[in-house]
Image 1 (cartoon, rainbow, N blue to C red):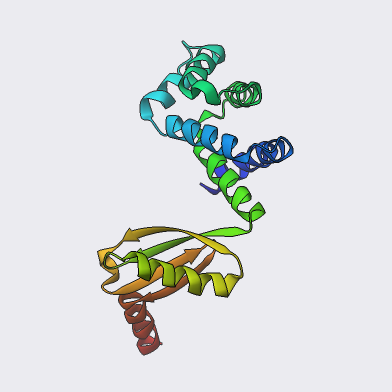
Image 2: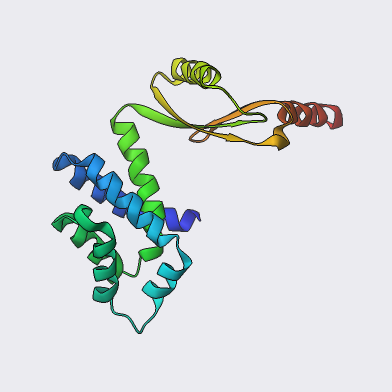
Length: 178
């Protein structure tokens, strides 16, 4: 996984600089999301890897899938990725691009896991706590993870704030065994 991200990073950085210069971050974001979704489909991966089909045939299919999003720059990017046989990197490129975009916009994405469904007010309260902590705007994704037993676990990049019952029990167990 880390290897794929290492290979995907230069592509994401190049696309980000290109999109920033052209003032087209949202358009690139949309196009990369479509390409990432295509690259996660097993049939599309098989099609792209099949030696019976040329890079230009795969390019034509992806360009058709992109529709109006297939600007000349996006089309050139797709051609470059396909000629380098990097089709499977598209989800990673899209993720890295979104991280660069969020950093440029002064926001951070936080992943919140909760043992139970959170209402909008609870999510907003957690967002404001995290925003004060990092000093940036917070975008969130929220998932329900019953294994937490209670509480929440929040992830911001490499930082994890574990305020779950499961996390507290694990910490207590570690203290008692050491």
